[in-house]
Every structure is written in C-alpha cells, then in structure tokens.
Amino acid sequence: MQAQDEDQEPRRGRPRSAAAERAILDAVVELLEAGEPLAGLSIERIARTAGVGKATIYRRWSGKEELFVDVLRDIEPPEPDVSGTAGLSDLRVMLESLRRRGLAQRSSVILHNVFAQMKSHPRLWAEYQCTVIEPRRAAMQAAVQRAVDTGELRTDLDVGLIHDLFVGPMLIRTVHRPDAPLPPDLADRIIRTLVEGLAPCPAPDAAPAATTASAAGPSGKAAGQA
Figure: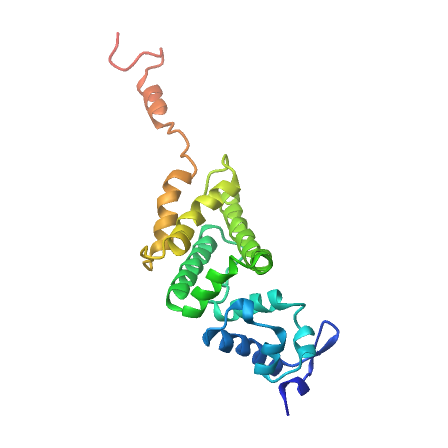
C-alpha cells in the first residue's frame, strides 16, 4: 500500500499519515543530497520521489516554502527543553542550542547549502524567519526578562538590548565567522563575561558609617578626645 493510502491521524480537517509525511520529508532531503537546488524542486518532483500524490502534500503544506521550513526543522538539531521559569539558566541552554546548530551547519553539507540558497528565496527566508527565528528570539528574550525580574540582571537597561548583547556573540561566531572556534563552554563564557557588567550593583556598604558612630562617645566625640 502506498504512503498516501495510510492516512489515519486527523490534521487540518483532512486525513493524515505519519508514514506519508515522513516519506515527503525524506524525499526532499534525498533530492537536496543529490544536488538538486531549491529552485529546481517542484511539488510534482517531490511527490514522485516520495511515492505520494500532490494532493497528499498540499493537505499538509500550503506550498514549497512551508514544506522546506519543516524539512529544515527535521534535519536541524531540535529546539532545547527549557524550564520556562528560570532566567540565566534557561538562556544558557538556548545559547548552547545555537552553538550546536552552528556546529551542525558546519558539518552538514545539506544544511550549509540550504541556508546559503535560502537568502535568494525571499518567500522561503520570510517563512523561516516567521515560524522559526522569531519564536526562538522571543523565547530567549523572555528568559532575559525573567533574569531581570528575579534580580539576576540589572533593571535599568532595555531588555531587548540585553538580549542582543547575549545572542550577538554566538551569532557572530556561528553565522558570520564560519571559521571561528565554538568551544563547549562558549555559552558559559558569554554569560559570565556579560553578567559582570549587567549584574545589579551591590547596595552601598553601611558598615563604615556604623563603625564611625560606635567609635564616638556620648558627646559625639571620638573615644580618647577631651
């Protein structure tokens, strides 16, 4: 039985088959690994390679852009699990995830080629930005906000700017400097370096004033004065 005949799970009001979806995603990867450029991938070609009908693809994706984004999600490292309640510890997990994605893009020819081609496909790039990058950015900024709210970071700075200061160094190394080192402790080093400047300022120490007052006698003069 072909994959398109195995529809069982409902989605978007139409039958859905996990086997058919897997076959479609694998077909796109197979074509890309064979050197087919994104521009040369048609729904007809993908359907034929997957052994499904075009209607099976359109039941799941409105067009190639949405399909290609799901293919990228499938071959990229998965989104990390975070507590959703912590601040800097959640941020560290997400920064480490960015580092791992950078390593994956360096080691995977298909990821490298797809991301290089995406820039010349505005609709695909816009879909990826909207459905992947923006939610990821929002999650990281929410972690920064939690760090501010719990006193881990200063409250007198713009949260968006703080987010950019944390994420910027990782993006520079993973995206703009493909030969830059990505050591395992990079996320920790970024956070540690920035926290030294973004941590709340300690309260003024009142101890010296108290010591001076206690050293004075009842008349307000220091001990030993006549």
